[in-house]
Length: 444
Ligand code: PHE
Ligand code: NA
Image (cartoon, rainbow, N blue to C red; front, side, top):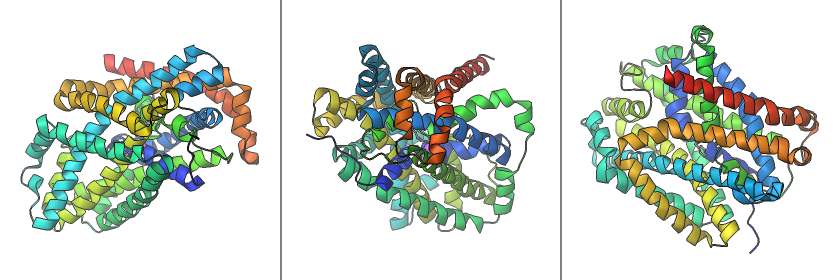
């Protein structure tokens, strides 16, 4: 059977934006920004996104579009060596680690969405009574496993339906829905009493944190930039492998990075006014999952019409998480389909069965969850991206330049040579450096 392709260019861009926009934008981005100097950190982060993230993204596109295969087949075929196939296998492995924890968090979100919706219908939201205790219950034991399985099943359904009829159709309505809901929520949040104070906190231009701790911030900023652009596990290689026409990759890459950043900024414009309007100290309930599920849940419980706002908010988070999970599952599915000739259905059930178990382990064991979500994923993504960049810079070399230039405009062609130098030399060096600073910070 002929390999599928995207029906439209917009379809590809939206699918890639769907992958990029996820938990990283909504629960991590606003907090990292607010804690590290507001818009001053934003400037630093944007520099990293455009100097490291976008070139990296383009490197993944070049691999995928040239090989038209999954990461394993792509690296093997483009190099003519099985050894690079193993490097691709490392990416597929990392994608399974990533989806194992991502699906668990996706499950928590579905539960909050369900309970909020129930509240709209019945007038009483279960988690409003005691947000702290509710989060404890939602994120442990049988319930956590059950909702993880629901989330994983939804993800698999879209993947089984294929590139055009599944992923492209789904993300084509999910992305506009996310934007519309977030803009609506941000507009509503701006009418809340603490909004001015919240903006001042979130977007103040404070360079002191950066000046005092530049190297300490580089690691988190780079980690966030890679994670948010879905780099380092082979998602973008896989999505680009379904491109059939040679249109400008730099244009697509830049559009994806811009849209992804807009969602992150918008998320902060929703989250902080909500917390400030109720006098909830930002950070009081933690800055990660706790902030989202305990802090915001507490805020929704106190505002008039809270159930409706909560439903809209958790719908955004659920759509964002689902479109990212789809892109993670597609990696191993495309691997099994390309290399072992499985049907999409067989491939998705095989991977789904495996992740059902590994995800359940994450759901039940907080130590495993913490290690995977907090440390392992960061390391795997950084290493995975570094390996791919070295591949593009040193193994593909001229071929990469040729592929990069196809369909690119004059600007794209002009930056192609510096791009290859950055990809082969500067970026891998930078990634190894940030990995070392991360370990250094951990050791202190
Ligand atoms: N970009 C996604 C997010 O921000 C996470 C992700 C990483 C998705 C790697 C796919 C691959 O949540
Ligand atoms: Na993202």
